[in-house]
Amino acid sequence: MKFLAGLSLLASVASAMSVDLTQRGGPLDVKIEVVNNTNVKASITNTGKEHLKVLKTGSILDNTAVEKTQIFSASGPVAFDGLRLRIATSALPEDAFQLIAPGETVETSWDSAEVHDLSQGGSFDVKVAGILQYAHVNSTELKGTLPYSSNIVTASVDGAAASQARRVFHEKRSIVQSDCTGSRGSATRTAMSNCRALAARASQVASSGSASKMTEYFKSSSSSTRSTVAGVFARVANECGSTTSGYARYYCSDVYNACSSGVLAYTLPSASFMVNCPLYFSALSSLSSQCHAQDQATTTLHEVTHLSQIQGTSDQSGCYGYSCVRQLSGSQNLKHADTYALFANSIYVGC
Image (tube, rainbow, N blue to C red):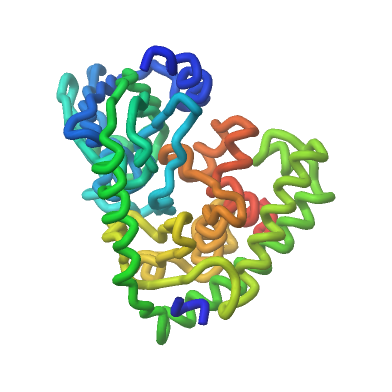
């Protein structure tokens, strides 16, 4: 049952990292080093004159295995295969944030081998780039984004040790026990039914509906963009259309201890399973009639797009919510989970 179930590389790195939201500038200075084979240590300094209250959940400041590092071998980028989250964009708790004073440096570290396959060993170029969302000091309401881009470090990796770190991380899934029963099981099944309906309607609109709506969310209404988006939503509708078949397994137990402050749900695409966190059930309605609001249906839709069999979307290094989606390029929107969730919501609500 489905519920139970080096320098020579710099040119390629620079090309791959030409992301709109990760250009240098702003009050964040990030420097990294690689220690103990594959551990990345990042030092983040507030170079501005004001305190920065940044969202750590889902970012490089998070302790969970989210996408934090960009790694390149001689043959190109090394794929990330860790956790994809959906973060609440309202009513966030204080402990979801990190306050960084002017001139202060905070440090964080993680093992990049857990979520990148570095088992071949040898030379890799490592970089950290993305955004941090922020709130005003006396608030938890997200107000904007702060881009950052680190130095590039060339690391010599012991492939056997990297392979062991990766194996230990991914074997955690063997302890999963499904507990999507009772009210949580009912809520999850309802969310999947609503997800199917939202995705089916969104697929129709993407195929032949409003050009302005396509341009608003995906920056284009060309036939190729329409075909891509409509295809993604069609696959989402098919996946959400059954609780006894499909690609993913759905759980309500926190397999990777990733249900931290503000996390609604997460997906491990490489293992095709999804987890609904306690906040998913306590903070979200089943289906919202408010523009760009989060609910259980669109959260499930968001997570389904992360599956490699559906679209393999990312979160663009922590980009959540309508205002952030509007800052992305068209090519980024096509690979961004929240863009699909927000588009589906807008079609249903009539934004």
